[in-house]
Length: 136
Image (cartoon, rainbow, N blue to C red; front, top):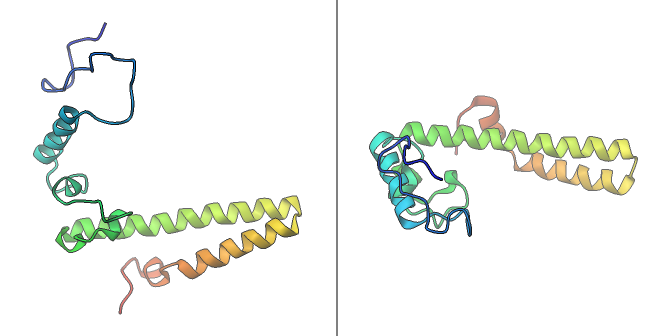
């Protein structure tokens, strides 16, 4: 039995066939509830931004075609999130390189070294050093 007490009085009820047929997709009423809650309690957050601006044309938040409409603080958060992502991605690549060296597999070492070179060439070095976007 599902309790009728929730953290919010307007939380939509469970689907008729709950828990059968559960998916990660939200029903319209669930989507609208979440959007309403975010926009009334955290209007200036990065979570609120996609609610007002279509994100269909962006694979990553920092590549959003309407990025100029984001606040300075939001753009700065996205920039720093991108820097963190670059560093974490590099850590995974270097870990895999170390494992390939431990395995003493010349083919794997060569492939992981190529991955490391690709990663290094893709880095925004200026931003990683200064914390700010590249100039020019």
